[in-house]
Length: 246
Image (tube, rainbow, N blue to C red):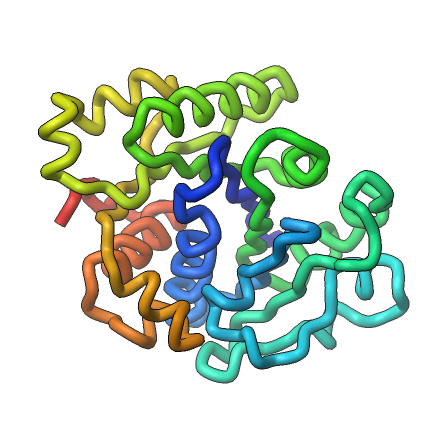
């Protein structure tokens, strides 16, 4: 049975979508069968971070309600075990049938090792769709006070929903800025009240990769962000990988 992850953030601009794409590509590079769903209805861009912007893709609604098969999901040309369904553009998220969405995910769990749901930032209907369906979560935050506060709020909401497997990823970390703020990663963890899944440093290669329509693991495989994605991918598989900014 495949693992089902919701990738969430309280605040926009944390790099949640890039992180989702990076972890998915890292797992696919190891031979894992991975399915990514862009659940940001209306503002979809996971395809860009995956390097699939020029490839036509079915939406998850096409499969859950439109008669298409999950086997018809777009397959990544460089990572053949990585499949992708985009977000629908022809229906507001409030009108999406949650039961049919959940049925799609149950089907996906029988075919894939890992399924990643890239939720929209915030706690509106898209968040609720993903939070209800998933049972494991990576909550992405920056190190700024607003991002940390919003992450803590999302963590509280997940707890109220009975979701207990929630781990924090501190993304786009600038060690000099942290020092200037007199903050440590432990401070961020304490403020959010969540265990840590990983730390990703600020890295211009992430933006450059998206600009060239390539996943960062192919565009700059040795860059700091790519290395961090690989470490987090290994860690959530249960391997004892040390956490730190490198």
